Length: 310
Image 1: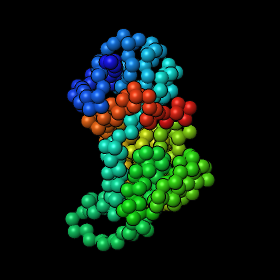
Image 2: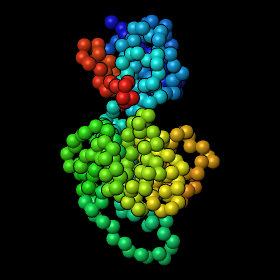
Image 3: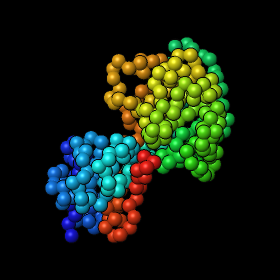
Image 4: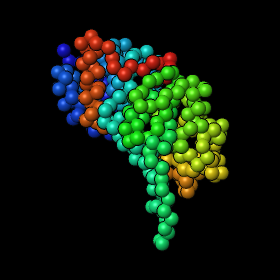
């Protein structure tokens, strides 16, 4: 039986994904009619990204699942017309990319590399950095990406502490939860990595109060969601030295507007949303596997809890 799969993720993405998806469907023994346009009542699966113009899911009465190509689902999960099961993207390659980004920037701050890179000629001021076990790295968000980054950093010897809204257990990581645990982690984290999903509860979670709780001279790395941070509060904390520096990969508006104060700030590093990009070849295998599972009667992997928003 041939399944009709609507690719609702933009024309550029379709050109990128056509060959990898075709190969992945074949690998999983699926006969797929992959289309960018179809009568809604004929569509059995939708491959989706926020670049799509699809907003009304009501007509897709036969659709068994919507498969998101991004790890984040905040731009679709609140859609009231979405009654079909929604799967977020959990891809080993995406996770690997995030781990490499986070470990790279944690090590950069830990070793004080910025001072060495920007030192004036003739500057020779040796400073011995602490060893990794003497440095507390905090991870906000202990989902798939947070756990992977925490485990990798613990493997490098860092004293890693994580926070999530619900209790979690991760080997070699001190885990906190709830409001009290949130404050405890902030008070200890010399380098803080934000990997929370964006929900009404997490928006602006890093505000003036949060920055004031952190050790003076702490560092922020945000490859999670731009709106987790209150921009003005971060700028104020950077200007008064409470926060020494921040590396930001995500923003409320992307691309980041040219007149934003983050640009040109001496203590802000901007990267263009590159920490965890979805790679077509590996993501196609995740999508094909999930469709094959549903067709065989197994449960959909990585299904989003719409009530929680992730």
